[in-house]
Length: 388
Image (cartoon, rainbow, N blue to C red; front, side, top):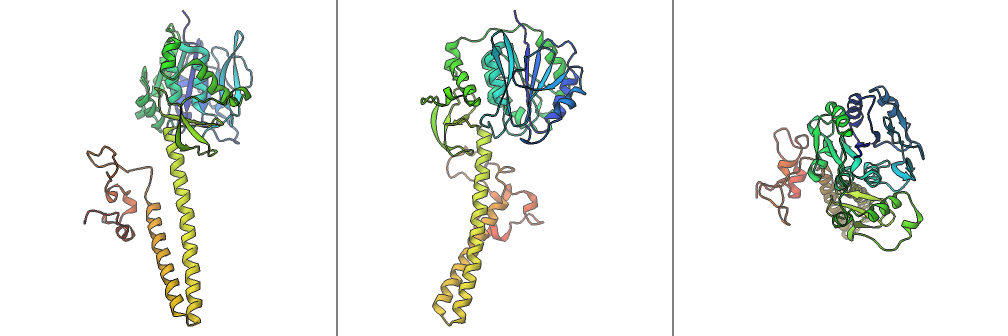
């Protein structure tokens, strides 16, 4: 029986250290190829291949278009290009595509994992390492659903635990270990016989049918054939795509929650939530600027009216100035609240409408007074409910 001859690694923040430790534990005679995606800045030069080559005995090369995949070699994604593996006759080659971003990244982890699962089925080992948010979770789910092995760095060992923690929450992971133990573990797993791929009927029930995977990868490759097909899989959601404004389609199936728009941008739940937070914050800053402009204009109009003895207009403009000042103060209070950290529901709350936390208790300590008291602006806003 074939062994596990392809290992795919995905990481983001803190991932270089984790991958370096993993690579250090791989043997020189590893009977598998290794493909690596780390989130990279689009226009920066990447030295990751040289860093990893110094870490262990295997050769490490930047990925190139149509490069044949060879066992015992590590291939590293390059900036601003998704890395895919694809069968080309009897060969398996690398593909570099500048397709739509996934989870706000290019390269992203999920496309590599999906392409590996499609090309190698149960012969794939997927590994999620340190990183923020949850890129790689859906891809690892596909690897596992198609018979491959799912491996995750222990979140307690990760510099940034979000990616491994998300994978553990959403995928039936086979192995969890610190980065230093992953190299020997993968060397052992690579030599074990691969299992059987589930039937196409079972894959279709899970929302992971082969034709759907082909289509997702065709969209990533900006293939005209797939982009021109009018039918859609999944269900339309109420959410717009943060990248282009198009409708997001829910393509979760039985796997992790995820969305894809008409032109191909893909978002996990965490990625979409992060984009929504940024949109909300940008809108509030724009509103604050407009309100402060309103304050200044109303002040000048009141001054002019006062100089001309127009008492009624003076009072009107003063009221407008004061109202804009109060609204601006409320927005500044909201902007001081973090939408990402230290906000926890009340004990017993199930998240139904009307279940609110005491925001005073959730405020970061640095945003309170020295004695823990609320900012007077927030008290006026009605945030501190303890006295009611």
